Length: 330
Ligand code: 8YV
Image 1 (cartoon, rainbow, N blue to C red):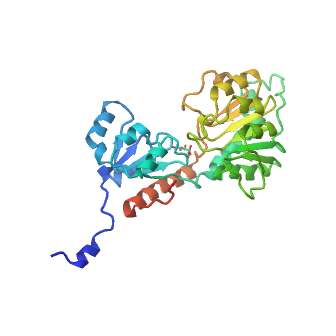
Image 2 (tube, rainbow, N blue to C red):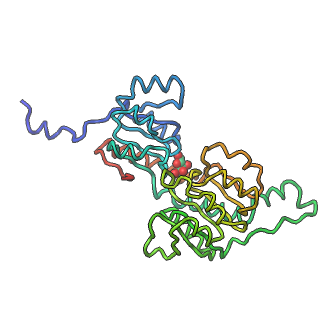
């Protein structure tokens, strides 16, 4: 006869075995190593017959998915995982995951906020300075011998004391604002809702923000609500003396309209760390001199990637232990 004692010693949450945990796509090496060695997780191949075979044979047993923000768990994959309970996302952005479907199905989702805020804001400032002052082009000018051949590098745009419009005043947007204040910049912003007490000038639309400022700094979260927010009209409002910096997601900008504006001089220049179809750039962008291009390195420091990996694994452990997440998105 079962006793009360044996009932009490039963764990509150029966263990989730390694073959119910799925690594989706490539993830940070430290996370991948832990997933395979410590948790015995399965790994989903990117494409091809092996992916199909794994989903066919094991899809129905998967309860936890661990993914990078770049790959995510999209609609198609989520539909192949009928018992999925939790998605552990490496990265603050989770726009590659079908969040609405996850919410409807009661699937818990975590991301890695805060630990990357400073590095992404640092990158934004780096792009801001490099773009306005054309520092990468100036460096190329030294390397290709133009300087020693007697030429002077062209004059650029003063980066101190500008009016900067931050699109998306979340954690990263605010960290960028703090840094820009040290440059004597006047900060304006547009956000889905006004941030009471932020101390910066609020604009109710992206167009108004772009029209009132010298630099449009995009720090909005990716996803359906921000897709194409910086459209042709907003880009035109930035104007021929204005610059666009994007450290958020390529999907926030109409890249075709941006390319045309950069070519025609309708905007002065752009600094971009993110693109809609990474690692592929819109054709023609590479040929332009008035752009500074980075390979999505916003959070890419040793320290921050280590912290993101640790938080990802802490979320996983927490879910496996008591079905809670440390940094849930809802
Ligand atoms: C990462 C990012 O490179 O956190 C994010 O949303 O864009 C970057 O920090 C990316 O998420 C890694 O998957």
